[in-house]
Structure formats: C-alpha cells, structure tokens
Amino acid sequence: MQHDLFAPLWLQYKIQNMTSFKMKIQKKIYLRLPVCVSLLSLLLSGVEAAQKTNSDKIPDRIILNLTTQPSTSIAVTWRTIVETINPSAQISETSEWIEFTSSAKHFQANKERLVLDNGKSVYQYSVIFNGLQPNTKYCYRVGGDSIWSEWNQFGTAENKTAPFAFLYFGDAQHGLKTFYPRIAREANRKHPEAKFWLFSGDLIDRPQYDSLWYEFFYASNFIHSYVPSVMVPGNHEYGKEDSSGEKISSEMLIDSWKPHFTLPENGIMGLEETSYSFVYQGVRFVMLNGNEKLQEQAKWLDSVLSKKSEQWVIATVHQPLYSMSKTRDQRKTRDAFLEVFDKYSIDLVLQGHDHVYARSATLVNGAKVNATAKGTVYVTSNSGSDSYRINPLYSNLMDKFGTDVQLYQVVSINGRKLSFSAYTATGAVYDTFELIK
Ligand SMILES: [Fe+2]
Ligand SMILES: [Fe+2]
View 1 (tube, rainbow, N blue to C red):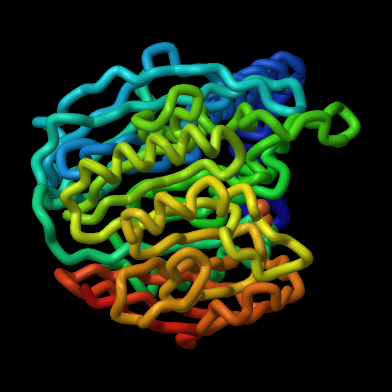
View 2: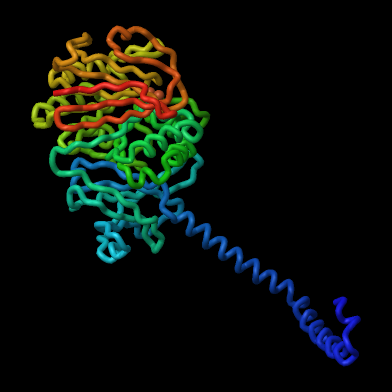
C-alpha cells in the first residue's frame, strides 16, 4: 500500500481503521478458508461431474442409412456413453427460420447395449423415420432425456426415375485417421450433389477395437449425419478374436456392425443388414455379403432380379469376381454370382478387397464382349492407405488398373446414360467411362 505514506494524517487514520476492519474480515476468511475451499472444490467437482455426465450423454457417431423406401423413409443410428433412458428422435420438414421445430414429430428409438473390447458398455440407438414426403428436405435431431444433437438436414429421394449421383468407396480400412479422411472430405467437397455414399466393405481393419470405429467416424465426422450411406461387410468385418488378438473364427459377422448401422433387412434370413436390395430413383441396387451363404444369396438375387422393372442394376460385393492383386482368385464369389449377373446383364459390380484399382471391359462369362453389347463392368477400388501389388491374372479383361493410389468414385445415372469417374485425392481423374443403354 505505497500510497498510504503520502496521504494526510486523517486519511491515514481512516485507512488504518479500514485496514484493521479488513484484517478482521480477512482473519474470518482465513479461519473459514479450509471450509470455503472444500465447498468450492465440491461445487466445482459437481459441475465437472455433471458436465462429464452430460457430455457422455451427447449423441455421437450419428449416421444416416438408406432404407428400402428412400423416398419416404430414412434410418438414423447414434451412440452415447451414458445410457439415455428415453432415447428418441425428432423430425420436421425444414424451413427458412427455426419455426420447423414446433412441428417436429417424435419417434421413440430402439436401444441396445454394446460391450466394447475394453469391457466398458456404450449404448447404441436407432430410429427409422417413415411417412416422409418424396423429394423433400427435412431437419432431424436425436437424443433424449433433454440432451440433443444439433438439427441435421437431409433430403428424401424422388419417388420416380430421376437423374442422381452417388459416391463409391473401396476399402477405407487403413489410415482411417491419417490418410482416409482426405479422400472422404475431398469427395464430399467436390461432390456435394451425391445422394448417398456406398462402401464395398473392409471399412475397418480390426472392428473388434472400438478405437478404430472411432477413427472411421472421425474421418467423415458430421458428413454421415446428412449424407446417407449403404455398406456391405468385407472379410475384415467378419471374425472373432481372442484376448491376444488371434482370430479364432472367420465365420461370424463382428458384433459391432449392426449396432453401428441400421441397414435394410430384406435379403435372406440370417444376413439382415449385410445382404439387401433397394431402388433409388429408378436404379436397382443389390448389396451382397461375400462372406457367407453365397449360394442362398444367388438364389435370392435371381428371384429379386426376375421381378425387376428397373433399367439399371448395380451390385456390390466385397470380394471381386476377377482379382487383380496378390495371388488371389476369388472363385467363391465368381462361382456363386457370375451366372446370375450374366443372366440379368447386371450393369455394374462395385467391389473391394484387393487394395488396387481395376476396371474391366464389358464382360459376359469371363470374356470381353463389344462395349455396346449386354454385359457387366466390374470395378475394384481402394480408398485407404494400404495397397497391394498387381497380379496380372485377369489383366486381359481390364481396361484400366493400377495400384498405390487412394480413390473415390462418382457414379451418375441419367436416363439411358451411366457415367463413372474415379478421382484421386489430388482431384485428378484417374479413370472414366460411360455406359449407354
Ligand atoms: Fe477384404
Ligand atoms: Fe481390405
């Protein structure tokens, strides 16, 4: 208190008195300090605990999936760490101002507990919004117990044949948090018009580990909350490991696949959410599980396609019918599906697994045909950071192939024309072709 030395006597007296009064106060405070500190720390720890509890209740890993009726419904899945007692979702046609919230419809969510590799539990929720209007923009949010996500926007499909584009990604699998994000984000930045993303399997190298699922969702972050996805499992989404990480069975779909997605269940019994079919604006998609029940799926596929009325058919299966890497030759998928693909002249087959790029000429029964003839084009691609060496076994069937390149693909369908382009992470066109009916 340096200024006291230069103050007049009367003022110094006043200050002294004030100081002694302040000292009394200070003494009281000092005496009560331990109590105050305890109360304060209790209060702060309470706030911290409440914040932690609330943050653990905030919906995470929000992802839209297409349903079998993409013009009138859509599925959403999310997770929380702490259980939401009354999980739900709200949806409304969007509006320019925020009044859309007042007309939001309420949907009760399904809930399931998922035990992670570290023994801890998380909670996964899903809702299928139905009764929606075609070609309409909606806002939705998910959560419950007074804790909600942001409002996300998406658009429903048209209920008739109409031009559209979608993105196709091969194995993300490696470099999920290092190298895959640039491909996913470049694709989204360059092609916001894409109506959905399609993954041909091996999304995650070892999906037993929740940290890798975290990385997959981290890569595309909120994009999954407004661009719907469809996916099939690869061999890496199959298998059980023991506590040392050794694979003890390759026969079973990983436990974490179904909790993370809400995919169609209209395929064969036992392969719900892994083998299914849907029509998007006049194009028939068949999503096949290349890991099990191949003959049964082939029969189902035959029956689905025998009734089809769509002009275009696009199939997805992880294991390619004509392998172009390592010493592979995926006879199982070829033996099972080739006959049906040829019978109905499926236009395009989107595959993964080989960690290379390979695009065939138009093929029938393993042989090239005239590009204008009926037949099938097979594509294998890779979006992750692990690449394999080319195996030239079927190179005579390919119009384009290569390795050591991360890619995403844009497929556009407009009437009698299908346009396909593969892009690198730097934005260059790596391959392009058209199919004309
Ligand atoms: Fe694979
Ligand atoms: Fe793979």
